[in-house]
Length: 215
Image 1: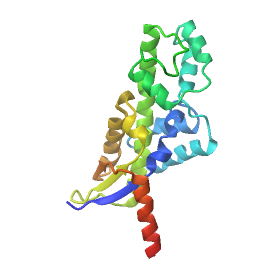
Image 2 (image 1 turned 180 degrees about the vertical axis):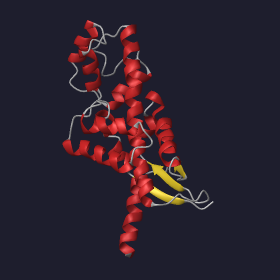
Image 3 (image 1 turned 60 degrees about the vertical axis):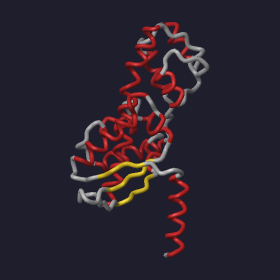
Image 4 (image 1 turned 90 degrees about the vertical axis):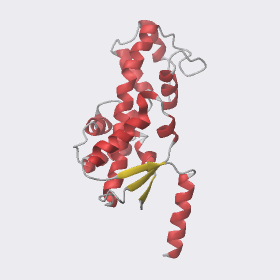
């Protein structure tokens, strides 16, 4: 089977939106809401996402916890502990949710009860679902723009690079990104495959250099 290859650094742009699409307000929130619908025009999604990047809004996951604590979703003890957190990376957030009893992480200063842990798990999955849909929308935009994949005999081959994509465990992130691609591209009759290429950025840069040299 002959494949059309599309090397993407799309997640380098899409995944910084992970925290932004948590909020549900502002440009990133709009993009996250739009991404939940496979019928949304891709141009609208990418415009909203880029508006978030341009505004340089904070994108750390801890904002979700702070807002949840302020809304009274945690015990007073946990709310006070969350208030002491200066920052929280997506990885720290993901690690804790994957194992809410873990030690030696960013949450050591917060004394969670089991009910607090349950609340955090309930809050977390929708956050990562929104982020996965937004990532899928950005990747799909590049696939649609290339104009390939209309023939099932020649699907677009999408190589996705990024540790967030492969290592985020919460909400079945990788699977949800792939489902988002099926929803968005499948609805448009575009055939594709995803693959992993070792050291894709380096390989891509080398290929681009060779192409430029031959031009």
